[in-house]
Structure formats: structure tokens, C-alpha cells
Length: 93
Image (cartoon, rainbow, N blue to C red; front, side, top):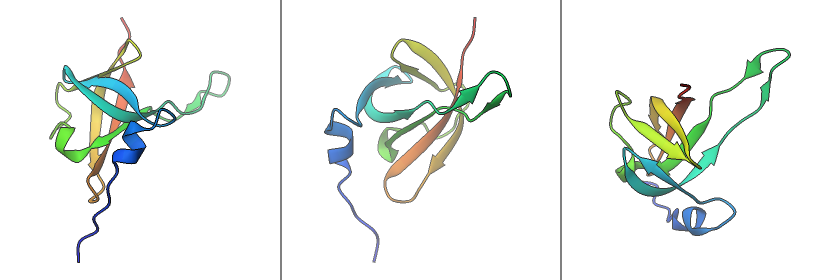
């Protein structure tokens, strides 16, 4: 039997859900900008978790804009439950 869960509560909750643009399309997702230590240069990449049906199929040329910051999608990781994590890289100009 397939796992079926309604994830809408995570995206509609002000604590988790955040409006972003995925390839120019408004999407409510979960954004995570993890730890960065400039002294040791330790860091992990930011991610956006979105419903799989709203995620880009391939990362090539896909973009995400969160809080006015532009990111390119470096990896697309569907988890098999209807959620997909987009591994992001900040665009610097």
C-alpha cells in the first residue's frame, strides 16, 4: 500500500509555509537556509521543500526566488511521499 499523507498543513501554516517563486510560478514551500560559519568555511546548501507536482523535473536552468533572493536549483530530490527537496545555490552578481 502506498503512503498517502496530506501535507497541506505544513504549507499553510505560517510557521513553516513561505511564498516563493519556482521558475516564476508562485508556490508555498518550506525554505531552509542552514548554518554557515565564515571562519571555518563550514556550511550546507539552502533547500526548498515543495509539493512534487510543483517541483521542476530537472535542475537545469531552474530558479527559485525566496524573500527577494535568487537561487538556482542544483539538485532535485523527490522523496516518494509527494514532497521534493530542491537543493539551491545563491546567485551572486
